Image 1 (cartoon, rainbow, N blue to C red):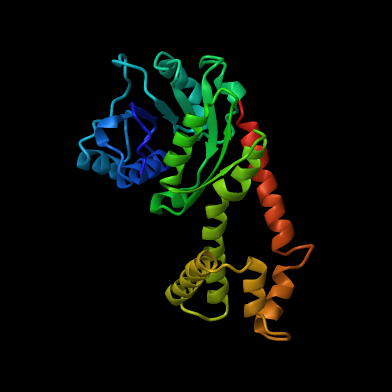
Image 2 (tube, one colour):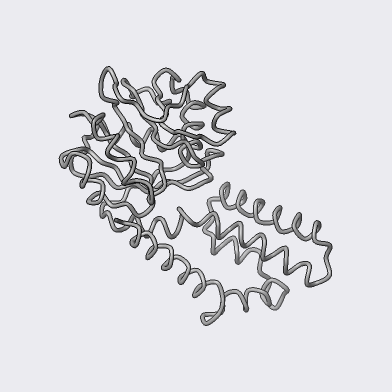
Length: 275
């Protein structure tokens, strides 16, 4: 329960990530009256959620009776510079600012917000929509113990929280878990396509691939065994899985070099977006 939020939470941006977090907070018991949502055009599913909780989104908040306790910046990094000037006036002495915009560094935010503001740079991922996300987070020295605990409670409402102590590591988090769900979804696509090439009906191939990946993920989630051990448990010496893994684990063209290159590319793009 998010019981240690005493004031108002201002959510700036109610798209997929902002909406996923808000849904998790409300399900975790956050009072709708404590939430303000700034978004000129929330997507249909978000509009329905807001309507169900009687939360009216606004394009901006010119005046507030008092500064929000927390401001969540959940807009795309490319539009952050357009949004920040209207947010600055709402930052109070005790306001915690949490940015979930990929690549936007604390330094880039401080070009607009007060230099002494308490800032957390966080990178959640889309499984937050079903409460199974994980968020990497970095706090500036201005963030108090109480604010850090509040931030942990907010982020934990949609999954696990992992704090890092060097800001550049957030870009690495982005490459692994922030963008990671897309890698898994593409794995399902590729596995289904491979099944079709072996003669399976496309619908059956997709059902097999999708259920295999989600089932393996759930087994990994529930098991205390390491991923390597679970892999070994499926692999009989000289068997079919071993033959497949000989290809997938190849150091030149298998999963290891491919994923290493993919994560590195995502991290570099996050750095390019730093502004």
